[in-house]
Amino acid sequence: MKEKAVYRKNDMVTVTIEDVGMDGEGIGKADGYTLFIKDAVIGDLVEAKIMKAKKNYAYARLEKVLKPSPFRVKPLCDYARVCGGCQLQAVSYEEQLHFKERKIFRDLVHIGGFSKEEIEKVMEPVVGMEKPFYYRNKAQYPVGANKEGKLIAGFYAGRTHSIIANTDCKLGLTINGRILEAVLSFMERNHVTAYDETLHKGLVRHVLIRCGFATKEIMVCPVINGKAFPKAKEFIDGLLQIDLKEKGEDWKITSICISSNTKDTNVIMGDGFEVLYGKGYITDYIGDVAFRISPLSFYQVNPLQTKKLYEIALDYADLSGNETVWDLYCGIGTISLFLARKAGKVYGVEIIPQAIENARENAVINQIENVEFFVGKAEEVLPEKYEKEQIKADVIVVDPPRKGCDEKCLNTIVRMQPERIVYVSCDPATLARDLKYLRQNGYELRRVRGVDQFGQTVHVEVACCLQREDKANP
Ligand code: SAH
Image (cartoon, rainbow, N blue to C red):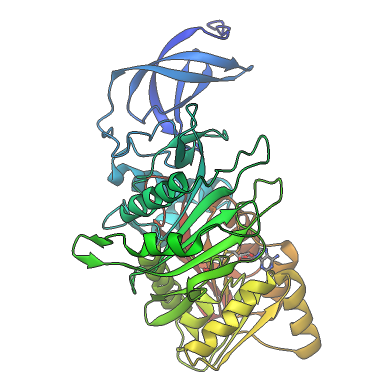
């Protein structure tokens, strides 16, 4: 057997990239080693420098692309490589979708224990975006000063806290740039300082911009290390004068708020906010359901794809109008309200009290009365309601955070014996783990579909439908 080479730091290797890792990095094999190479694209032949070598694998830095992959494209953003936000901008969008589909497929097989044939039978093609750029409705730009002391806004360079000036992120609206320039020029004129996190001094920490894609309403909310914002009137007037026409669309700033965050922390927003102009929220729609979005509300960042995702969830739920439906991990009630029109009764459960307040308000503004929301952990509220009040479930929808569902939650779901379970997931690995449990407890996986919510990034969103087995095979 050929003896395995020993790699050391700074060694150069030439390798073909055969796979894509969890963070979008290229993976190649050389001399029995697995090499992880950031910025290398599947199909590339590259020269890379070893940065850190372990027994069986090594991290290497891309030095030169010797032969570019057919999937390689020129990133739209000049900062794609230094920025931590987009891991896949150098990969064609079509191949990004393949990557996401492969990830779902593999996790279901390797972690979920399904056979390839089973997954091939139930998996539908991933739903891609029509325009995989300019899709985000929320941007949070850190504000700081460069070496010359000039005020800048931009983003943190990958895994660091140093700000790179760039007000033109290609995932958000281009008008964000005009708003940021206006904020910075107001600050320069009025000697308003930027926050310096190493000294915990200075005023403006971040600028949050949120927009309602359906209503064209925009909210601007500086986050400040202090209680008051100087010359608020001049600040407001400056913002309202900005020309916000873009590609034939007329956007309008309808809300200007300030959030005070005086803590020495990485958390961006403060605990509350003050309204300087307009209302303390903007409105947006997903389908025909209206949502009020305050500076602090959680709201899906890609409303166009979210609508597609929810339509799939609704289709999978297959409601006839009388069902009792549970929406676990409901956030501000987006899925609950979307389902309510087709269900008899919807119960939503969510751990964050403010989100439930928003959910209740959203039910009121949409005049949806057949929903009820509970604050608490899904794994605690669901068993309690089931055991003490015998509330039943025909369909249960879950949309948990990355870590997936607590086993106690899954166990209660199984005991409640809903006819169908719709699982919406942002992490195929924990999804696969949970599907394995549900399958071992009498549920058959009927449909699986990825929906790309975050083009240019490695994030993957999936919807699945499971059917109770006695119903599946009567
Ligand atoms: N379904 C919503 C939100 C999904 S994000 C939407 O589509 O907008 C996942 C949500 O689960 C978050 O709002 C988070 O606060 C909530 N959460 C996290 N752990 C939870 C738990 N143990 N029980 C209930 N909710 C939880």
